[in-house]
Image (cartoon, rainbow, N blue to C red):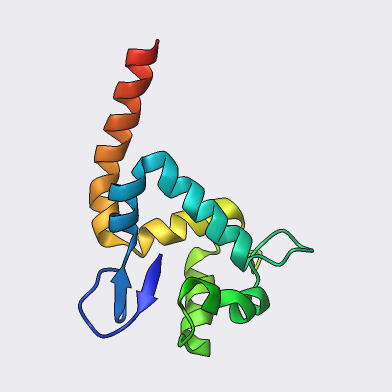
Length: 122
């Protein structure tokens, strides 16, 4: 996903944006599967959503071990589209794309690719 590090990378304050690399290697469907796996790792198993507490507890599993409290809270606020204080799987995937400016630019390519494959299949 995104890994904390020195300046440089794409999505926000000092993150190395790994999503474009993952997208290139895995393709669109593979990337979505990996995002779903990331969601599963971060979510509160009882509630089925990512809460601030589950993000604090599990963020190191995705290489976000040195994110501060303020960054975690900000991430939750930015991703919480419906205002319920938690991230469902769709909100998490949208957030990951939003934190990856390079991937946002490439998303039209992935959409075109998926549509082209769909048309060829029909």
